[in-house]
Length: 242
Image 1 (cartoon, one colour):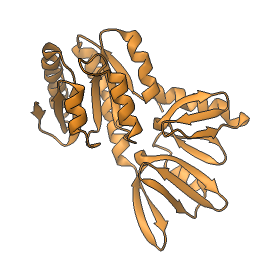
Image 2: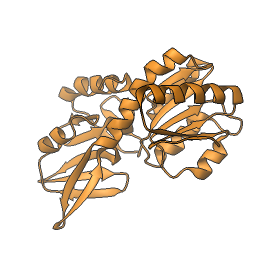
Image 3: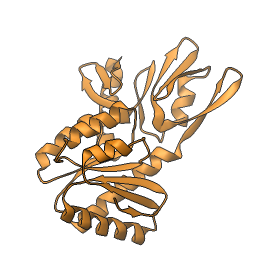
């Protein structure tokens, strides 16, 4: 295990020592040039990563072909835990990386690592990490307050005059309008499939006809007049421009 000291936590799960050394060199150079506070931890197999994993990482680089596990399956376990860390796949073959969109991977990088390509893509990854961390909202619950991160919200549901915030840590209810919450979360990758829901696009795993399927197993209805806009939002999110 190697560590580059910093503030935001990054994990690399990779078994090839040459690829590890190349990644460390390019990653450290990127952080130095851009003065970014990242801490990189390297695991040489999936088992060591899972053993140490406690949702502590902001950015994950996963090799798709590991000796003891499949990087896609590793990512599925991460998403099933409710973790919405930014995931990037490393692979020798691009066709394997397409499955990464099933687990809300932001992108993939072909090996061997090409420094200028990595540097260009890291701008998007770093922006996604900052977006995950920067947005918090305060809910008024039972005469008290609760602060939740926007990245922990799976979706918001309108129930009569209340809003239910379905999060990775449970469901919380507040009396306010969906329009108000929509404006508070406008920069945090949320979109409305219909007038009843506001969905965090990070948790979307599929759109099937008029249903949006979330990584939690929930299936929410998409209205006909909102489908095109919702699908467009999701496409832009996958492309890193939403």
